[in-house]
Image 1 (cartoon, rainbow, N blue to C red):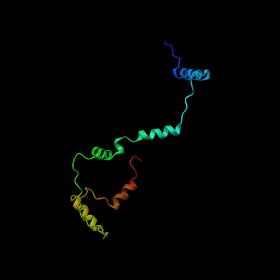
Image 2 (cartoon, rainbow, N blue to C red):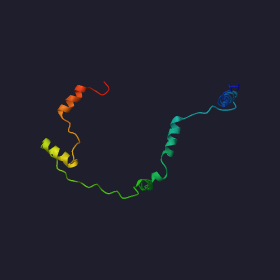
Image 3 (cartoon, rainbow, N blue to C red):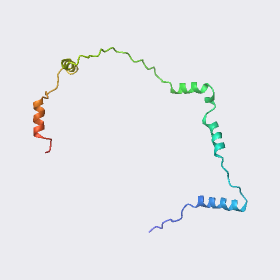
Image 4 (cartoon, rainbow, N blue to C red):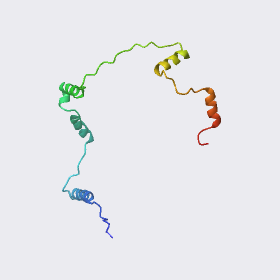
Length: 121
């Protein structure tokens, strides 16, 4: 049976212990952190040199420009039918599908389906 390695990676703990001992012995100063100054310094890196000039906007436009011409959409005038007549909608449906549906669904057919129940019952 193989032995399980129970030793953990102590390098980080050892380094922290060494720093602590060196600080206590006076050999090393504790590092100080000035968050406000670090934040202000980081602002310099947030904007590249090219973005500080007008060339940055030109470079961004060139990089994101489409490679092919995109045609403008054409406006097609289609008057709205506000009559609300069902015959108009039926004729429009006939224009779309002239053959119609294979079977007409009527109220009687729906009633029969309800009487028979759902499949598998």
